[in-house]
Image (cartoon, rainbow, N blue to C red; front, side, top):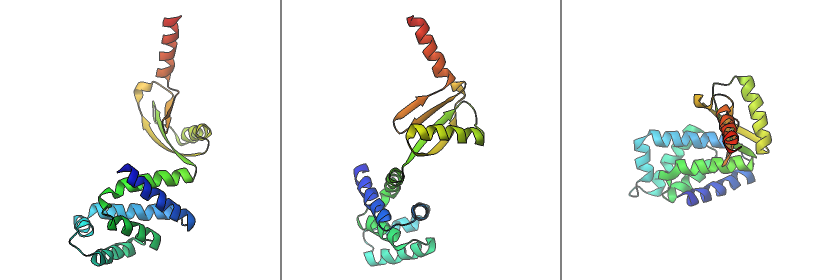
Length: 179
């Protein structure tokens, strides 16, 4: 499905860019629809039931769109996915869309694992360094792993930067053993 999800994601990202839509608002509307869709068994059944006419499904979708405050382009995107029986994969399509939108915006995802919780000041300083490594803006997610002993491990895409004390000790041990 990921190839299909990626096609939908690229197509919708092009619409958002071409029509100069507010990317943040679009993402929020998509997330709101996903939450509503996943949170309502009845809605899922209506929108995915092949026995229900398209026109009836669109009326239900329009009611949800009005409640959420969807712009027409977002509503139409959801309708296309519904028409092609892909609503079961809506979460995956959104994940791909978010990745494509972030890439177009020059935003990289960074996973930062540190030995302890970092203060706001430490996070800001670390994010500035990570942004230099990534060559642009980053959105960082943080977690802790006390086995690192100190420092941090940063993952940007498939690239890993290990600045942990544990890794430094392992490199030192390797040099001492091979010397």
